[in-house]
Image (cartoon, rainbow, N blue to C red; front, side, top):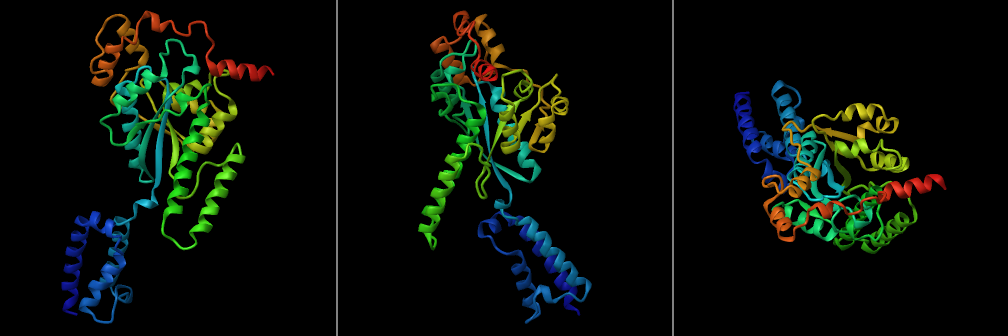
Length: 352
């Protein structure tokens, strides 16, 4: 019995040591239960931690094992998320970039998610928004803005479409792209019955292409979620700007990460919408406590008036704008009098 106090001290030291060695343990994926049992058997041959259940010291061993299991929880137990931001980015601003950082901090902080990538998807020219400059300029500016980021990137698929593409289709495109990549990874892995797995992946791809409204979440595949500001959330209430079925699919099948701004009441807007209220568990509201009122509209206004936009956009973006003289009174008149593509399409479909 003299050894029990010594054993207790050793376990306390051992737990502190493991707390410092958690990163290495994660890489090695060592079993905490095995580590504890080994230490016990060192002093009590033939006995492991699970055998010592008849006194208080053994209860402490059991609780230590539980704590170590929590500390060494594998990252795969968290849902991996890809944040997708769709919009004009006309031009991209520092606030656009802040949205990604705020959303990442929020989701990672829940302990349920792990954000692995951010995607900026500029809308195509067919959107026909007033003052919208050509897509290739907006893409280049977005690429310059994310040049220093190690996790946010720019995707050109949406902007290269000849016709305006609904946001729900952009979400589906990126989700299916992730699923296809997951299939390719499984096919290339050196496992038994690889041919059978390959056939299964091919069948999954065929099924997804045949079904228009397929559940986008697949086990082991990161989930794509729409990142937006409060203005996009509130635009759900504009008649004919969004199809009701598209709103339902966005919030039900994918989910929203909405960064609120000063003066908006996103929670009230959700309360007043039956669809949003029904799926509110899939809508994450992120508060921006450091108020930032930067917007592309205000940037363009400042440029038209010859005012400085330094520190409102990344330096490389400012240089590109000045080099190509992108924003002026003439550029702001682009698409004047033209009905916005979604309004035109959805209104026409409603009448037919």
